[in-house]
Image 1: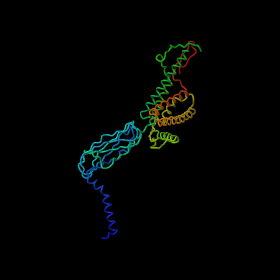
Image 2: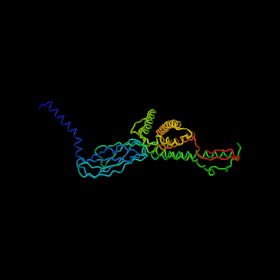
Image 3: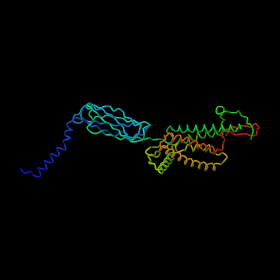
Length: 181
Length: 186
């Protein structure tokens, strides 16, 4: 039988499509889950007045995955002391749909101004990681200072009081010494 | 002058008795409190904008990365700074008026003199704020760069007021043994 170019082309396409879809076909047969991280709310914190940002962790089961997924949170970037993560509660995947958990990131007045990367990794009961690679979300931390006040006005007045006291004592002492001579 | 004053020999510091304050000074100090309190009853938004804008432009001129966030808040090197009433020095300027007012001069001579001082104080305030920002940019804590430096700036203003005063702080005079000579403590 003489093979026509059309047949060859069709055969090539079939083999190519099969090879292309093979990984997905095998992937689709394995139960697992996808972990997604929503951007922090709010996306930036003004320390110390701001405080905390909340991130939603979403678990999407694939191919009938069921089980408990626990999370760990890591923060990189910026400088010490880094913001701190709360311990995200684990989720129990019981069916299809999306299952959510939350993690809060807290800053203190000592947290340096920087953009921090928050990475959440998941692990099911069997120790399996999500099917997708870890995702990280940025969180920017900044400080806002009130110039000349913000409770620090007391420090300026205290400094002034100390200087005035020293100045006053020096004057009194000098005048007394002058009087005694 | 070899006169022996009629005072008990004092030893530093416990035996030094602080002198009484003169009544005129107390009146002026009371007016300072009233003026400063009244000053803080207004928002001074235009002056806060003017001060922050001046600092923004000076910082930009010095090569820092700046941006305006709101009428009273600017960003320098990614750091937000909000300008409140105290940072405009308007309370210092208003509080200086009762201490600098010369009762022997007419109104028309006092007002231009005080206007000039207020202008100088505005410039002096910009200088100390910019120095504070530079110190903070070089790693000094904000408390030191702004607050402690602010205390020194207030003290510098006090020294200026003291040099320009037309009043005495205390009535203390030490009468000499001869009767005619006296040493003022002020």
